[in-house]
Amino acid sequence: MITAKGIYKSYDKLQVLKGIDLEVAKGEIVSVTGPSGAGKSTLLHILGTLDLPDKGTLEINGNNIPQLTKKQLSQFRNLQIGFVFQFHHLLPEFTAVENICIPSLIGHKNPTETKKRALELLDFMRLSNRADHKPSELSGGEQQRVAVARALVNNPAVVMADEPSGNLDAENARQLHELFFNLRKEFDQTFIVVTHNEELATMADRKLVMRDGKFI
Image (tube, rainbow, N blue to C red; front, top):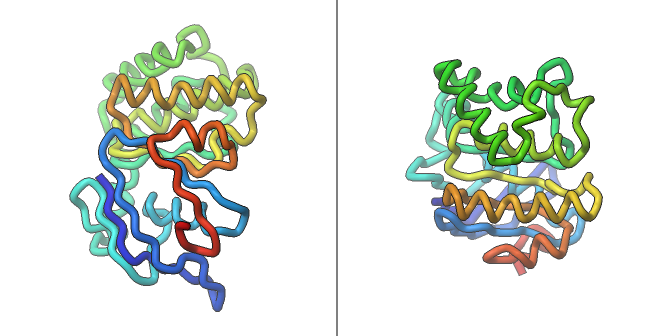
């Protein structure tokens, strides 16, 4: 699903990534952990095509990422990659189901089919009764599950999660971790998860540890 070779990234004179090699198979859940400043989020941004490497090759689902134009890259990101962040970034003026639909509507998909998919995801998340609630009417755990559903609405090749349970209490964090594995079982979903949560990191198929811009 993903092959990254010799990934380097610097900002001004600060070298953040120092030759990362990584392969991720379809349906695999890979955790990336390590101390703050190790380069974890920078790596996730590059794997998620939000940023490009200074040097190295990156192929995702058969697409050579550095060779795509900006427009192609934007379309690819919208359709092939889902994002879950520590803070859910739900739009407060929209309901749960409307928030989930947004990536598909940006991608000009059929609104009726999009809403059907969003409601199916809410049902899978056990949130069908919250479809018409706005974020302010949802608990923190519910908001994060809506954010996960939004990441899945376009059936992406891979979901990139950056500290997804970092803003949740222990019980909601546990439920979110279990959700990732249920999604893999149900949809063969691939996940790359950056986390400081040792429980989640250890649950993954592979736990990769970064330090000073490299895997150790």
